[in-house]
Amino acid sequence: MRILIVEDEAPLAEAVARGLRREGMAVDIALDGDEGHEKASVTRYDVVVLDRDLPGMHGDQLCREIVASGALTRVLMLTASDAVADRVEGLSLGADDYLAKPFAFPELVARVRALARRATPVTPPVLLAGDVELDPARRTVTRAGRPVELTRKEFGVLEVLLAARGSVVSSEELLERVWDENADPFTTTVRVTVMTLRKKLGDPGVIDTVVGSGYRVPASAGESGV
Image (cartoon, rainbow, N blue to C red):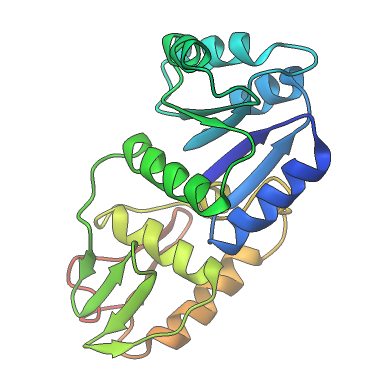
């Protein structure tokens, strides 16, 4: 999942980003409202973790802009106040959830994951294709009942491919959904990750290459991989 943190306290933003990345998420950072608006306008984020009191464009206005865009992006608003009136006002702006500072990091992770599930089309709790099974909640993958140990990026690529339910996913989309803005679009990152993922999943092949278009995992994965 792709997350944007809009927070003007750089140490807090970096700490939250590191924690979310350890949870397997792709995370970008904006340190003011204007930068946050620019990034949210060009990238489809699952969740924006938005500080309310921002320099430049105020967090309230940025929240309104995101909601008005019609995007599926969900907004988790952060604020230094836990007053009921502030929570009500934040939610009335269109925010999907509200969290007061200071907060417990596990709670932030749980809220972000819950919002991300609402930002994407409904998928089964466990993703299946042939004898491959991926459980997003437990972060586990098995092949014919055998555990498969994957890196965070390999897991993310497989999750996106399985969620596509047989449709082709381009390298560009994989780069956008699994990596963050620091990824170089001209590298072979996606191709190398798919190659190592194929090796770990074993034979018969699971991931098809669609020349000139991208990759897919057919429903009958393992019967005719390329």
